[in-house]
Amino acid sequence: MEDMLTYNYSRSSSFVKKDALEELFLAQYSEIQKKTDVPCFFWGNVGQPFILARCLITLSNIVKSSFNLSPFQMALLKDPIVTAGNERLRFEGFSHCAGVYARVDVLPDGLNGEFLESGTTNVDFNQPMITALGSIRPNENIMLSIGEKEVGLYKEEKKVVERKVPLPVKWIKGLGTVQIYLSESEKQHTFNKIQTQQLFRGMPKGVVKSDYYLIVRGNKPMFSPVKSADAVCIGGLHRLRLLEPLLPYIDSMQVFPHSNMKSTTWQLYMGNIRFSFSLSRESWRGFSGEGAVLNSLTTEVPDEWIDALDKYAYANQSFNATVLALEENLSLNRTENLTGRLAAMGLLGYDLDENEFFYRRLPFKLSRILGLNPRMKNAERLIEDGKVEILNNTKERTEARVEGTGVHHTVILEEDKERCTCEWFSKYQGERGPCKHVLAVKRVVNLVH
Image (cartoon, rainbow, N blue to C red; front, side):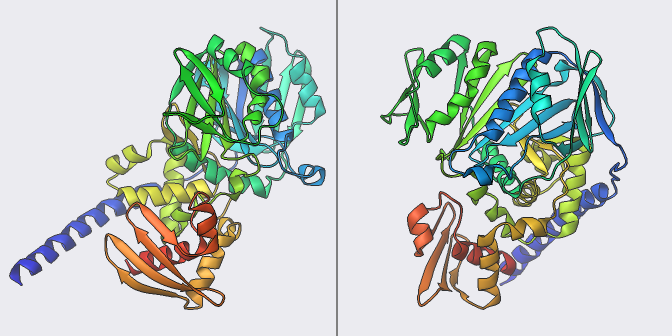
């Protein structure tokens, strides 16, 4: 008994110490004041205007494309999110169906201008802007202005200005998921210009309805309908054709598959400009319909902590989550929950090359994100109605019973595995995030602890 009391006292002391260190982070970053009255974020020259123009036209074509939506639905969606910060410019967008995510990064060496403040806006690239981009010649000087309410392109004495427009709800949902998937992806292949062009020339024609696999034989990459060891699985392979206009200008390409093949990301490198292109698992399944952010929402996180990390990210503009945890003495679980929350709110993007999150300032509230995730709302309702019963709960395993419509579902949570007897889990096997029953059990267990 004496040994047990000593052990409990030691555990309690360590928690107090850890909490005190975490409170230090909370106090330090809660004091940061954001600048909210800066109308212009960036003004200056672009080092590779012709390449940037080709990339932005490709991005606009991606935004205009759809692989499962009607023309009416397509008309409701808009064009790029533009972020200025950390000495670089970023232009992001989704296809109309949100199954393709693309981003153009203009890196610091590719810009000659002034960053007055970090900030983000969302504009619609209309025909005058597309025409102006298409007329840019190699080595021609252009200037860009990125502001809170507009993006301007200045060429010789002519200018084209695009105004801020509302951000589509589908994009808000997709932004959170795609950043989580990117943070769980690792580089598997690097191809030079010739290899990349050979790979695309060997792409099958038409709409590809079955899975294909990226494989390498000798020094030659190719797409194959047959799975083999170390192959990268690609659903909706035909979507890659959106990249073809950029292939003449690239230096190299890198491929980053998700750890469970839930997405693949193809990065094209063109001097000081980088074009990222992410595909969802299947062409009919957009990033906005995935549940990658839901696990981050099951743990209760006080608003003051979300606000503190938001201000930390604003102050630093980019950060590695593991380094943040070590340097600020935060637990990895705490850091993962916080970054997941901010990603779900659209405030964090992810850079694969730097292996770190970057900050973008979008005016989302967590309550709005919860409202966009019906599975989380349904999980909360199950808890409120008292339909979740924990049968057994240990560190290694949790077993619970959740009341459904005329049936009881069994939920099993283990360290690296979760299961449910409902139809949703049987159909998707966790590939589209947890079902509402798993979410409800996780939420109850986290509240207990």
